[in-house]
Image (tube, rainbow, N blue to C red; front, side, top):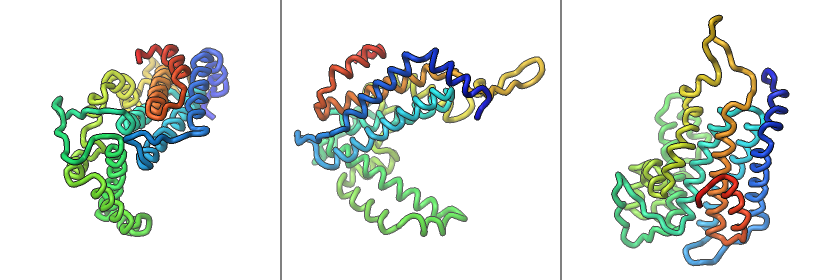
Length: 284
């Protein structure tokens, strides 16, 4: 255990009881959306859309729970790092489930691809295609890296990877294949460009940037060591430092994910979601 870990947990449970209770209630609501879950036959949906969107939503639920547990343990920097991951999951879910999206690259609309309506079906396939292309890039990188060539052959089935790439290219077409390969993302854009296209720029500038400090390990160094007259003081004990932005940010992101699922699948949870939006001070 870390120094004073038990005391820190007790202090956090007392001081941040309301926020932690709010997270628990939101988590319970988010999980309840899946039990049971009914897919929809509305236009624009198919099994691929269901597969990708539900996988991303389940991932969001698990990340949200991880953030709460890290906050309860007094590990704020780690909680903020996972909040950054939850942000990326929420963006991916919005990319797949939003009814309409107009992508912009460099502030200018991305030209439409003839014969490929940019609806949920295509976007779900773009996401899966990116996964296939990433597997191929990983295999290629391992095959070129001394000491990993044998691992590449034993751990990654090149035939399956190649088949997945062929299927992905067939599903999205040459123009989108070229865009995804060039951009190395499921949208063909940078993350910042995609976030701006989704009109979530404020969240990017706050939650994502703050989480980056913990991920890249430099800007948050003051949370772990500080200078004193007697030399460096190591801040090894668990504490409630930085858990408030993690709790609030993660709750906003989980509410966004839940709202996306509600809008797409009509779960009849809009009233409960609105309660959490009001609690978190969300405009919409």
